[in-house]
Amino acid sequence: MQASPEFGELRSKFRSFAFPMTVAFFVWYIVYVLVATFASEWMATPVFGTINIGLIFGLLQFVTTFAITYIYIIFANKNLEPRQVAIRKKMEG
Image 1 (cartoon, rainbow, N blue to C red):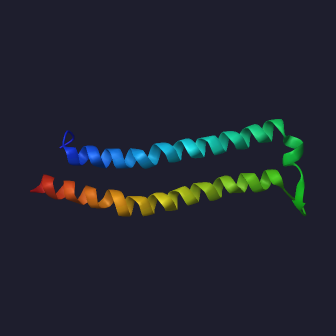
Image 2: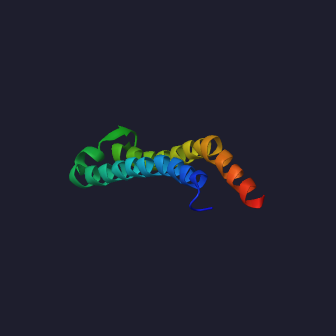
Image 3: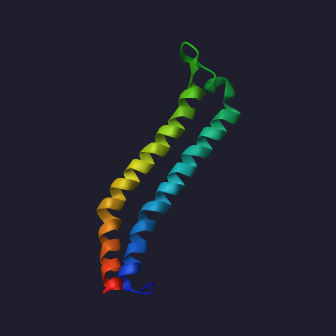
């Protein structure tokens, strides 16, 4: 089954989502770390009260993670799950 065109299509669909999203998140994380390292004074700029830019950027890392998870769930339900079901039915006969 692993060599079948259906499985290849499923793997291709998954990779077309997972790799770009992983790269985008990794770049966003590296930007956060670099800005925190080299522009620490800017990151310490208060926005309101004791909340500063660095804290907001840090919290946005969590927001981004949850957003990517939500987007993946929608993508998987729409694009991956139907293909997985078809492969499972074909394997089970």
